[in-house]
Figure 1 (cartoon, one colour):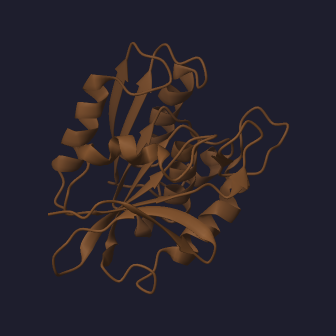
Figure 2 (cartoon, helix red, strand yellow):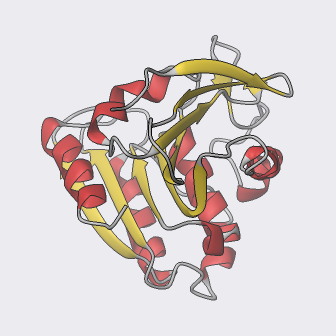
Figure 3 (cartoon, helix red, strand yellow):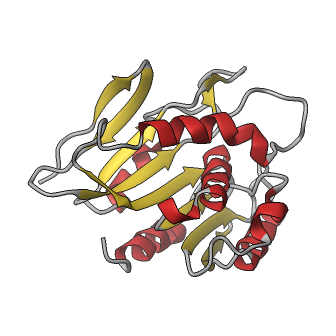
Length: 218
């Protein structure tokens, strides 16, 4: 039986977590919210993820101008570059350790990112593929500059789930389709779900994500 989620602070950084009851090391799902979100935003996806997994949802590093938090500092660019996420990547890698999460199996790390959080998940996976088992990018996009990271096929045989709404007016669906092509060029095995919704997941894509992670040994 899983414990209820709690909020905790690690070196002043707020993280929402759900640690399963019972002995042994548990696989990890790192849940990365979108722009203006916080550590609670991703919990809408928790019921679709395996109960035997540790769920970790950190708060973005930077206050967003419209409230909530962001994974990179504000800039005048239309779309962030891979390098814009480097401080967040370094911060995440700094806390993902047995020191902070002794119940977690860090050889079984999966990423679930929404919108800007998906961009961060893609950047982290492209830079640190050996740390990642699989990932889901939801209503997201690959950050600019990712082409250079994809050339050496760092995601060879990694499984990636991508979901997007064809009516999304924040992240155009063309960005998602381009992301799928680039992820495949990077070697990933991509499952793509597109539906007629806006900047959110449809019921079918929710179920698709659940099947995607359920089909993998946890």
